[in-house]
Amino acid sequence: MRQSKLFGKTQKETPSDAVAESQKLLHRAGYVRDSVAGRYYFLPLGMRVHEKIEKIIREEMDRTGAEQILTPTLHQLELWKETNRTDTAGFELMKVKDRNGAEFALGGTAEEMIVDVVRKFNISYKDLPFNIYQFSNKFRDEMRARGGLLRTREFIMKDAYSFHETEADFKKEYEKMWKAYETIFARMGLKTVAIESDNGYIGGEYCHEFIVESASGESKALTTEDGTYAAHEEVAKFKRDNKNLDESLGGMIEVEAKRENTMQAGVELHKLPLWQQIKNVLFVTEKGRFILAVIRGDLAVNELKLVHAVGALILRAATDEEIRSIGTEPGFIGPVGLDHKKVTVVGDLSLRTAVNFCTGANKQYCDLQNVNIDRDFNVDKEADIALAEAGFLSESGKELREIKGIEVGNIFQLGYHYSKLMNATFTGKDGKEEFYYMGCYGIGLGRTMATIVEMHNDEKGIIWPEAVAPFQVHLLTLGEDEKVMKASEQLYEELLAAGIEVLFDDRDLSAGIKLKDSDLIGLPKRIVVSTKTLEQNKVELKLRSEDEIELVDISSIAKKV
RNA sequence: CGGGGUGUGGCUCAGUUGGCUAGAGUGCUUGGUUUGGGACCAAGAGGCCGUGGGUUCGAGUCCCACCACCCCGACCA
Image 1 (cartoon, rainbow, N blue to C red):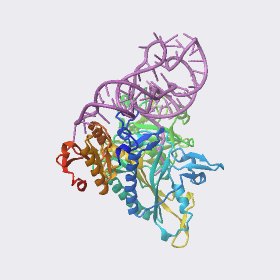
Image 2 (spheres, chains in turn green, purple):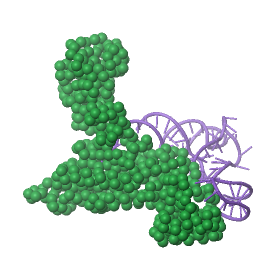
Image 3 (cartoon, protein in one colour):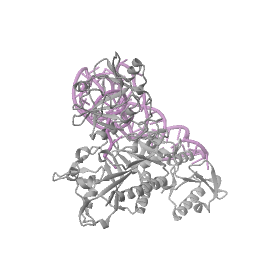
Image 4 (cartoon, rainbow, N blue to C red):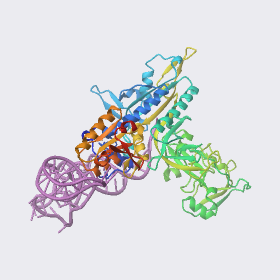
């Protein structure tokens, strides 16, 4: 490709509203341009990278035996009604109507479409398992797009869906996809960590996000130093340390407590450590049910774990009036003597790691001391509802550290969720109809591209790994000397003939501009043709990732790169 | 959706208490001088100042409404 004809230009100035490094560089170097919030144009350079990424994913997916298909962009809304996802999809569905008034959703994910096409066939257990995937535009009306390509409202995603006879068979596919993902990202120069994550309302044990550790990421995870445990903050488990279990139980007493409504006020007033207080937080479910989370004072409630523990869709904090309506007082809530008909009490496992707790007495300026579970109060459910934090110990006793990362892909267990809701069955060995056990596996291409740039750049520009670079070689000609021009043209043809992807900077511009642009665009190899070296029949070869320049005989350069 | 901010040639920005023909740099075009890390000189093209309304003799500037974009938060199968 001749750079003089390349559509899209580099730009010296950094766009003022760009935040992420990838956003600044991809814009300045002429890979993408923004349209409206969260929607991007991919220019020729950007498109070439996008295609390289797609090719790697396709190769590795095909290697696992998965097969590529394509579903329509518009999904008939009836399908989404079958799975009750018209309102609860988690992202706002965008809807359109055709000339007959038929309603469609712009696809944000394709479980319904895939199950629908599968159930059009008369499938037997002999046909199972299979995994079908596509690359297609996904529309997600995110509340807020951010970070350039890192979070957009419209993007191309590889989404794969596998169909199985049994859970055991699904597990094999899950492992296979896990390995394929590791290969895919490694080939692109990305080091990923697979973290356990939340499966939303579908539930199930198998669900992992593949994240690339980066400060600009939105996923927070906790992991052990050796990487044997890694989980999203939302689901991370940890070992609660025992405190004073050897102490004998004291008799429960009620004490006056003129204090503020905070945990810290309790610590100061009673001269007892934070962990010996009980924290009580009242929530309300979407159905108006009251849920009291009861937890050791030094821990925080993990709302998502609580949501799962009580089987709710969402929770919100209760108002002061609501707190009083269950017979207690803001700042002085306690688990002792509550009416369990009015409120469901959920206790964290940490309540068994200490004795003689101090907590509110459900009336103003009054606390209880020497409170103990089972003896003084009961909970309706005991569960892990605590938020894991850096410094805590993993269940295997290793210290947890917090990392931030960009989620580039995920693998999910869907189980029978969709096949049951959509009545999708196959014929089993005994001739009876059975539901499919399913999994799904996604990778966002634009986000992956941005992540590669986040990880591979310097102050001068992008440094593409070879596998995803738009071109392998950047050929620059310096000066207008006729001999140099001629030699460059010849070399360009020679490189093309050798099957090398080359971007030829044939523009009539100063050396400084060409060299700066070359660094910014970030192709792996740079060849410079100039009068300086041409006299000796040599050209310069430099790797973008290195500082050294090598002089190479012009006759052997095509073989060398 | 709550809070904050910004809209002026392609880009980055200036524009005074309201005042005359709206500026700079960069980029673009043309001519010339240059040619190893964003060169220099000269000439030129390019703007309903986000949109609509209002106040005023006069609005980029003041007022109202709306829209768009950005940041923080909420949200994110």
